[in-house]
Length: 410
Ligand SMILES: Nc1ncnc2c1ncn2[C@@H]1O[C@H](COP(=O)(O)OP(=O)(O)OP(=O)(O)O)[C@@H](O)[C@H]1O
Image: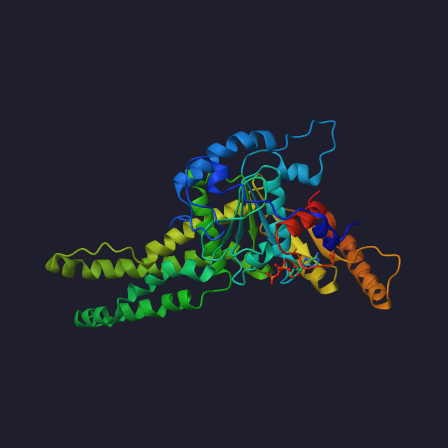
């Protein structure tokens, strides 16, 4: 097998982006697509995207692989790449096993097979920029240079995504409101609201809330027609537990919203008289409204996670006993939550060698034990195993990701 270093030495320098104004739509200077281009406050402007769509419809119809005929053997990747209906791939696993590298390599592979693709990181410790060797920070869609079809990347800051709900904590109304309500003999209600610890909920959210908000935001904007062009969405998710907890968030939010609604009812009836005296009806969306909207979005995310037609969760692991045990637990929990899981990537397997040093030979035996464990594991043995070798260089940049992707996604 060729090594990554020899592959990179023999490959041509990264070809110029196809998304530059001159090559993309001649004569239209529509945003010079440098990697740092920010594409409007709503992530990317509809006008820009419609240009992409027009340009790519023609190319995609030629490039997207057709579904194999019944007599042909359908490879794993053929199945993943076939059809232009949008599909979501969530990659997750223990920290440091290579989730980002695998997610980025899958995104490159989809784009090189004609799918306009978006790769999203919701992990607070983003490493997409490092993986693509390109600055993708800023919470905007950034075009990735190199692949055949449009590939955009988005590093969404989960903490920022939560900011929009932070104002909900102002439901307590601040001290002015407290004084006013005290004056009306309603201070107790304000205190009760404080006890709900809404501010605390948003300041120190339960694990998974940030990521859930981030994912729900992405899914929300992807629903709008301007973003129809993306036929493959790849998520590089945060380490194991968080992703799982987000599935139980709608229930958690339900409980909080229920309490808030009850209190709101009490306050509304108690203050309606006051409002009519002052003649001022405040129309500000309150915490319950915000949380209700968030809950609705979470329910959608949960439904999407469970939709076998459009979504797949791919577990990434490495051949160590610890990582395999955690992957087995992850697989069981995902199954329990009815999240479709079909594939397991075992990354960083020592490549075959005829002349092992002592260290390599011990390491290889150790990895073999972990691989046997996978084959005997009731959860993991049911999944399609995809093996990725430990390569001789760090995987950075589109050519390296293409090298890795061609090995994994077959
Ligand atoms: N098969 C491989 N061979 C060699 N290096 C690899 C391989 N897979 C990943 N790496 C390297 O391991 C490091 C961690 O990889 P990566 O960032 O993809 O992991 P991660 O699971 O996303 O990490 P985190 O949980 O911290 O986000 C990177 O330096 C990456 O280049």
